[in-house]
Length: 282
Image (cartoon, rainbow, N blue to C red; front, side, top):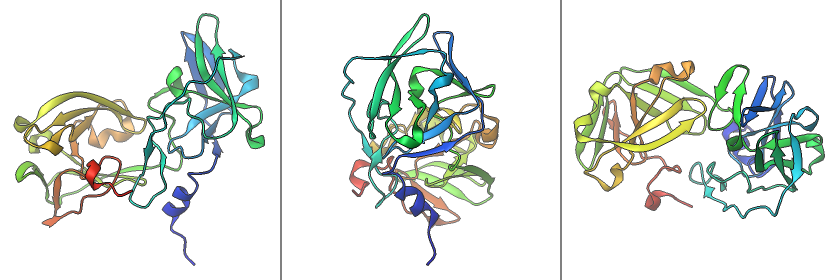
């Protein structure tokens, strides 16, 4: 019987998972180096979608101390697609642990990061501590890492397309192009990145919203004020990552909330965490 690999990946989400990385991983806190190691692992706690770094405790250049009672971090649930298992939204704080272990403070010569380390009880992770990504500044080799560590089983491919692509909302055409760049990302819908000259930016307003993606960079957003679904409906990435150069300066729209026509065919709206609340199927 054939196996659909995306089902295998989604099926592991309830489990504690890890994968060694060959990259040199560096973390700093308050100007002090916390770890500089070639022996880091990527760890996904049960229900976590995105990984985090675990490092050998013996290689820590900071002190670990027992902290106070763990804070009650709310659990934010999310489904990647209709029918997929409920997972933790990546915005769920580090302090929400889904496997047994001990939460610890990280102390350097000048700074303390409360609850920024976690020592899992699992014997396969013995000798390792997991570090809160948000508490430190991170590098892989000599390059800055933002958002969260990159998942080695998650891929982004970008391909040029001459197909006719049209984006509309409530009957108003917001973009029309034959020069889109199509971005294919593991477990996510295809995204259509459109040259700004082919977008009706005169109908849109730039938003203060900003998000980061470890694969594509920092995004700024635009809203279409003429529609309830138009808030933060389009975005564009900065130029920090060379491997996303094909989409630098281009705009993409949430297919979940617009009417997208490709080569004359109206596309179905995918159901994802970015869909309208009334469209999400639990």
